[in-house]
Image 1 (cartoon, rainbow, N blue to C red):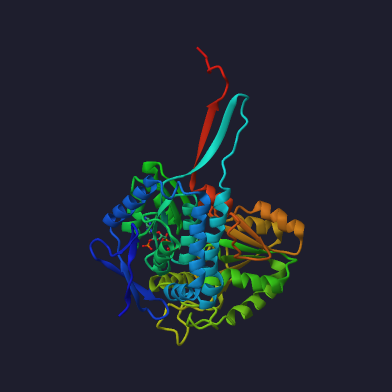
Image 2: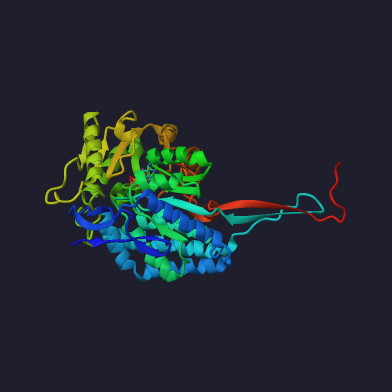
Length: 489
Ligand code: NDP
């Protein structure tokens, strides 16, 4: 019998108001892993009500910043002490290799909380010397109730990426995990309760996007919706949030290029782009999905890249030797497989991988890492976000054509540049319209460094100092200090 997991409203574990549940499947086997509450609009009402009450009580927002920070630091410690359990659950829920959950996901989730737990004591206003006799200063205040909506690919990390700064700044939060992978987010209820977060400050409501996500977006008491997910859903949220003039921050899709110049260290580029392309089965918003390469080094790169990719061990994600696990859900598997078929139909050449399940792995949602050559910029696989282990390689002549190719997309989340020439690297970094540019590396994200997208990849930035300020309102206070009252008439 699979576990029946609770959600968390006003400091209490609970089921959905109508008792309905959603099935969470293990992507490696497609067997039932757990049942979670299918939250209702009534549950969202309860959760937002609890968060509003907690905000109005002032207990959390009026606490000294250092004390709020201590709660976050304690939560980070608890996650770290339970890292094995969190990593195992993330791997069983999402399908990513256990070595990734252990090395990246869980440590980074704890690190986000630690970073904001420490940074919050530095959440300062400014004094503005506008004119003599006037004191002008700013206060950074919490916004109130934040609605957090997260996707399934890095659930624990992305939940903590929102909770760290939102809670540090003194807000109260209702967070909605993705239907396909909600389990580690639901585990955070115990973590924050044990860390001493007052009741109602954090509420976690599982359930579908159409019901829970939409009710959260529409609720008049929610002041900001912080969303990570697809561009399509992000734009829907933005439209709906506009009715109440809510703030939104949107971290959305990508089609990030890896731009390989003629002088690149090809062995280094092969290593780095393999990591950039296939981390988390390529179900990664900033994955290196389009290799745009100088024609002079195309053949050498392709030969080495294909050899490296064929050696990636696909299999049971709980096996520590596995480097690529199954895709998150069979519906998503079908979507990625269909893209591969479309690539073939449109005339691209498969160099390795393909649209079928690897032999012996038919029960899970597995695909082998797939590389396409002879890809032209008009092809669907070059233009659309596939969100799986599928990468395209296209040759261009010279740096100007490569710069143009990098920007030939509706997205602008990230890009990597591979070259040994510092001047080319920084000139190209300036030309590419993307929120993160990596030089000779791909997929590096730090708590301290702002992260977000240009163009249809998003609005606003998470992480870094900007990520904390994004959960505050700025209040300007202007005081007349002169002995004589101000007079005009
Ligand atoms: P979706 O946009 O489908 O879903 C994201 C979240 O939104 C889920 O919790 C989903 O719920 C919810 N949702 C769905 N419909 C609505 C709605 N109408 N109103 C409110 N909420 C809704 O994305 P995926 O989960 O499929 O994640 C993959 C996408 O996320 C990719 O496009 C990827 O690029 C992007 N992403 C971006 C990142 C970034 O930092 N820029 C990081 C990670 C991912 P439910 O699960 O029930 O459908």
